[in-house]
Image (cartoon, rainbow, N blue to C red):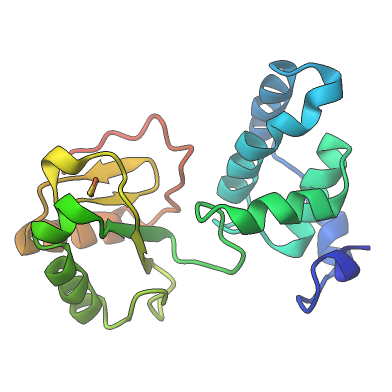
Length: 193
Ligand code: FES
């Protein structure tokens, strides 16, 4: 089923059979589901996909989307349609830390383009690419609602604002030393930069 739903992407039935949320993640998923009437369970899909993305390596593989469909008792194609529409979901592997640099007016006027070029040079990747060590992915984003502190970037749940080259250097060092997957569900993360 998954192989049909996800087109050309390989579907690994063995991997799919082994997929399971950790107890903590399943608790979170159950809590999310409980907020919606049973007949509108599909409304839980967006937050559940965030949990799944954080739980299974920072991206949504065909197997993960198929698993989420089974948890929510909806069709895999319904999961794929949503996951492929929103840019916050990754449909291919990404680094542990994804830098999303805002490119919209305020950030652009305040040097976002130079910040992107600086990160590209520093990490030796282009926008859309991941470093060889699997640590960083670089993306651009549309306005992230932090225009007054432009230029800025988002990494997981953290906003890093008033960016300078020096700040970018410190961010890269900080994330390297922490060496962990950053996701939109890191709500307890203490951002100090
Ligand atoms: S223009 Fe960058 S956050 Fe709004």
